[in-house]
Image (cartoon, rainbow over all chains, first blue to last red; front, side, top):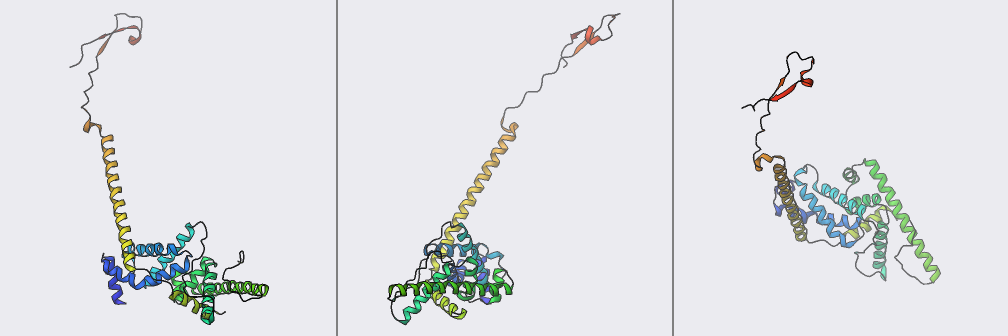
Length: 198
Length: 102
């Protein structure tokens, strides 16, 4: 986009308002990427700010022929990776979904949503990364591959394996819930995973 | 559950992620910039201080008093008696001190 190149150039020259316009345009993508990558809500703001700060510092080196969004997402993923490496203890996942989980088909859907998100946190980082880029950020396989610096075939294979592992985790969750229904004799919807299920 | 269904669920969850205030993000960037400027200023002051200390330590003639010139060395003459049976005047002769050279 021509107006985006002008914004980027102005921001690189020190125009705060231009950079703020970029923040407003892309903060949603960055926040979503961070939120899906790290499980703790209290660090999301810090990591988002760190991602934009690194982008701000490196803006002069940015090649305007490349898509800015993808470059920003690369920085965001690097920030998240550094954080996950530094973090010594696995933190419990904090849910951002609102709404009831207990009755009706809408809440069954929400419960499933909750299960999918919880299963995501139990995937290894590489699996989560490709799912987030393709489904959460709506990047094509080609764009995801370019961003990650891998061949398209590898990206496709990674995505397919990530989906398989996620399905496996969800099926295991279902089995666990089915066992509870049989034992208790009542329909109970438990959303906590059994320990050592990976 | 197929990939499309999982994708649809992930997108739904993504729509519910709360956004952050852009003004707060900008404020954070400005604060981090200010911290970097202060660190850079302190590093510059430290570098100048170290440089000045090195200058004063390695150039003593700049600040210490002038060193007196070395005193002239006395001159000696070897005197060997006539018909001395001893060939080495430095061992068996004697030396007299001449006056100090001007």
